[in-house]
Image (cartoon, rainbow, N blue to C red):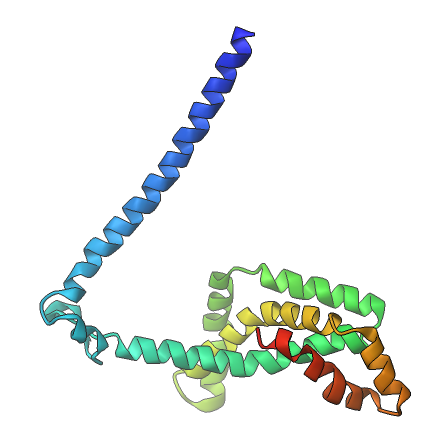
Length: 201
């Protein structure tokens, strides 16, 4: 009995120590990041952060170009990825045969598991040279970043849209078809409006 208690005590203390090491690691990360970021908030002041000049050697840490680039890339990725994702969800829920639906759904789930660093590497090695040869530019611009981001968000938006479309009662769709609506009319005038709250989440 004493041996069992000793083992339980050792396990509890070991798990507690590991948990505290994790907490300590997070605290150290926050500390080092904050310490390195202090120069950006001193000297010229916080307003310096919203300038367009980035020159750490002279104490200028303007992040305006990074903020606008991030927002533009996000909007571009959503504009490219959302229609494709909703179209994929419509295909999976309304048109695809059961076998194709199963395979395609697993493919979308596998795509969601691809690390972003891998997609970024593929973008630099495949997408950027292709855009460079097609447009004559450097290739490392907003278009390449938006396409890669669209690929990244595609599985998530597809899954959300698929759940929203499947949540629409079957009676709504059958009633529309019974009244003479074609499949596309049913999708456009019944299915999508009924699923709109879930699609906008």
